[in-house]
Length: 355
Image (cartoon, rainbow, N blue to C red):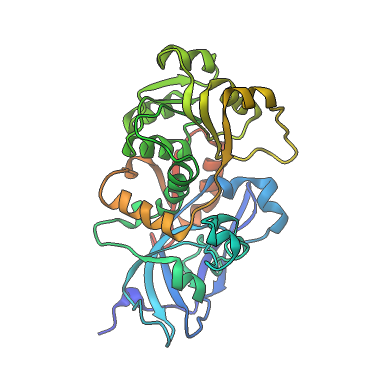
C-alpha cells in the first residue's frame, strides 16, 4: 500500500516574496527531478533575518525565499542510492565545490559555487527539488529524535558554529559579549555556553529577549541603550570581553564593540548593516591593543553536521526559541513579525499544516 503522505500532487502552494509587506501565496507546478536529484516535502521552514533584508532581496523579486528547511524525501532520481522515499532529511541550500583554492584553505563560504547553489524553488514552498550537488553534500539524514521544527535550526546554528569555532576560535574560559539578542544572538549565547566560555554577557533593546538570553546561558545582561563598555568592565573584573560578537547591524552597536573588546581580543562581525554604512576604525588602537577584527558568513556542510549533533544531543536547546509556527498561507504575517522584530524570536512556516 502506498503511504498517502508520499503521494505528490501536480501542483503546490508557494509563498512568493515581492517585498516585506507583499508576500503572496501562489500555485505552481511541483518541480520535476532529474536522475541524480530528490524531491523533498517541506515540513518546517524558518524565516531568517536575511529573508527580510529588503535592500538585499528586493532587487531579485519576485522570488521564493527560505533556506532553513527540514522535510521528507518523496521522490528520488534513478541514480540516487543514499536516500529513499520516506527518509527524514535536512537540506542546506548553499554547498561548496570542495576543489577550489578557497575550499582547500577551509574558506568554504567564499567559494563561488557555494554562493550560487540553491534549491528549486525555495524553502517557502510545499516541495523543493534538490539538485545533484546539494544531494551529494548538502543533505543530511534527520534522526527520528530530532523534530522537524528543531531541525530547521541546523543551518542557522551551523553559521553560528562556524563563527565561534572556526573564525573566532573561542577558547574555553574566554569572556564573551553578544551585542544583540535576536535569534542569531541567542544562538551565539547558547553555543558559547556549550563550548565552555567563561563569563557570557548579552545586550538588547528588549527586556524579554534579555530574559531569554539569561535562560540560555548568559551570566550578565544589559539594555543596549546603557553605557555598554562601562557595564562590561563593571561585570567582567575590570576588563573588556575577549570575544565580541556583533549580532545587530546598527552603527552604534559596532562602536560599542570597538569600545568593549579586551586587549588581544576579537571582534567578529555577524550582522551586516544597510548598504553604504562606513565605520571609522582607530587603526592605531587596534594595532597597539592587539585587537583582531574578523567576520563570518554562512556555513559549510561540515558546520551543519556539527550543528545537527549539538541539537540532537541537547547541547544547544533550540525549541524554546520558537515563538510562532504558521501555515504557509500566513507567510505574509510571518514576514511582518520578523521584519518588525518586536513580537517574535523565531518564526517557522509549516507548509503542510492544515492541508
